[in-house]
Length: 65
Image 1 (cartoon, one colour):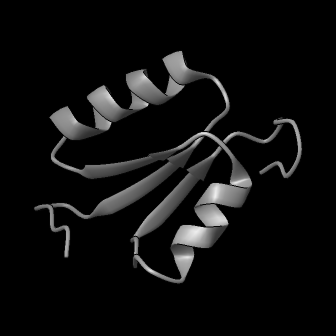
Image 2 (image 1 turned 135 degrees about the vertical axis):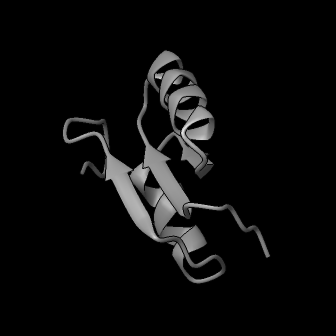
Image 3 (image 1 turned 60 degrees about the vertical axis):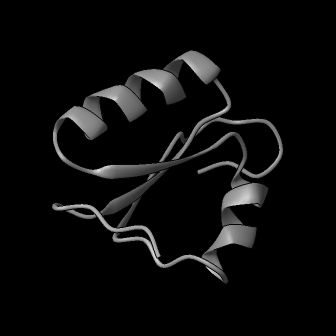
């Protein structure tokens, strides 16, 4: 199981630069980050991994936030 001092955050965005930026910022703040490039892939992971919060882009192709 993944653990972080402040919690585990799933970040969902179709832009790889946004994912990388948020991963860096949240990691530096003490969070563990699980990046997803689509809503579908994040939804599949919900059954396997418990996260403390989801941070999602609202406008994405396919399933959006």
